[in-house]
Image (cartoon, rainbow, N blue to C red; front, side):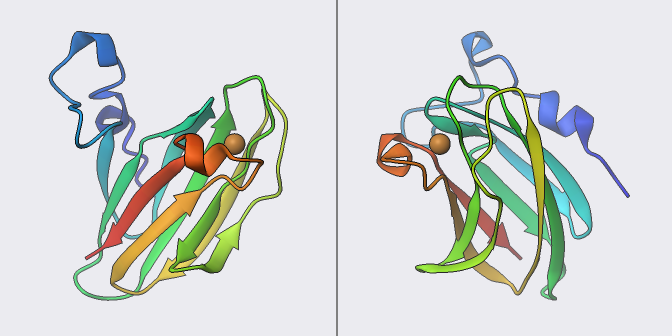
Length: 129
Ligand SMILES: [Cu+2]
């Protein structure tokens, strides 16, 4: 399994600039099907905030390991429209949980469903190509 640590670190320092702008907040990573994406959650965002899975037009397998680096409980729900495809329960600071999904080519979102966290910015985009 390929763990794209180098990719994930490429834009890890927002203060360094160059990787983010107002219209596309947060980092974007591109991975292949079967990859594990290491993601962080804090108040109130996911990092990375966008994932592109290159699957050659076929169904993709993706695993996300979410580390709660904040001070509140968070979770992650992968959604197609309003439908939950995969999720974790809410879990506390300092912990991590993983979620796996099989996804057809298309556009998805991931959100945190705790309180109003989604409205506050805990939403990301996931594209399978
Ligand atoms: Cu949250």
